[in-house]
Amino acid sequence: MKSLKAQNHPLSNTQYELQLLESQKTGISFSEKLAECGLYPLLPTQIEILQINLGKMCNQVCKHCHVDAGPDRKEIMAFETMQECLEVIKKHDVGTVDLTGGAPEMNPHFKWFVEKIRQLKPKATIIVRCNLTIILANPKFKDLPEFFRQHQVEVVSSLPYFTAIKTDAQRGEGVFEKSIKALQMLNMVGYGQENSGLMLNLVYNPAGAFLPGSQEGLETEFKKRLKSQYGISFNSLYTITNLPISRFLEYLLRSGNYESYMEKLIEAYNPIAASNVMCRNTISVGWDGYLYDCDFNQMLELKVSCQNSQHIKDWNLEILNNREIVINQHCFGCTAGAGSSCGGATA
Image (cartoon, rainbow, N blue to C red; front, side, top):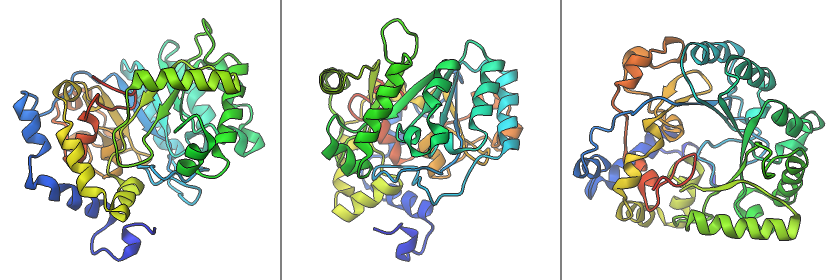
């Protein structure tokens, strides 16, 4: 299916997605649900995580990707913007720097950026959201496992399932085999091994219009299957709910599941999950330096509400800590069931 914009919709992709989400307000809105449990307006707790999108270029085209990333995307964070990010990291107490994409490793300054972050913050957690197949995509990436080990990077990688048929159906032909090889390479340098301190975490996204199962149960099953069949060890499994954005939204529309999926999210609203949503302690930095409450808002072009601190070059911690978080109907995806964040379940 072509993109929404390519189908001659009168609005841009982002505007059309927001219009669809707004149309669900014939029932209860997300703001009303927050108000019921005393969380409206939704406010930050403390900024602890800086999530930085290094670009939308990727060697894969996954069906559930809310970034709409792929080999044809040209959006890449510029060197100057990366320097502005480093200034913020240097001046403020940022405990975790979370690097994402696309495939963040495809940014030509990726390794330099990781090295600089580690120099500035020797004890900070540096996360790289690695799609695994990038390690085998080109000879220049084969040293990534050792590079990650050298700089004590936490690796978080998507693996839809422990079988080829389900993984390849969601992420592309041959992806499962390459992912297994990459995980074995990471294990060889110590990742996922007991007492190594090298964290290797996997991400599970449902393949269809349904919520993920129990994170604990899926983690147990993944560990058992990957260890017995491929000798692979990892630390934790994160379950993440698919939000109705970009390619997953297109799937919902094409399959006629959009309205029922939104109803499912709304009915599964969990106030405990709502109190722990990632936007309360995270700022998301777009490839162009603009600031968002989360990665999902970034893809919907919903910038942070504070007009005087909407770009990394204008970073003002006091203003950002006192902003109101921008919400819409897609936020039900993060508060359904056990909750969902870039770190997995929240309740």
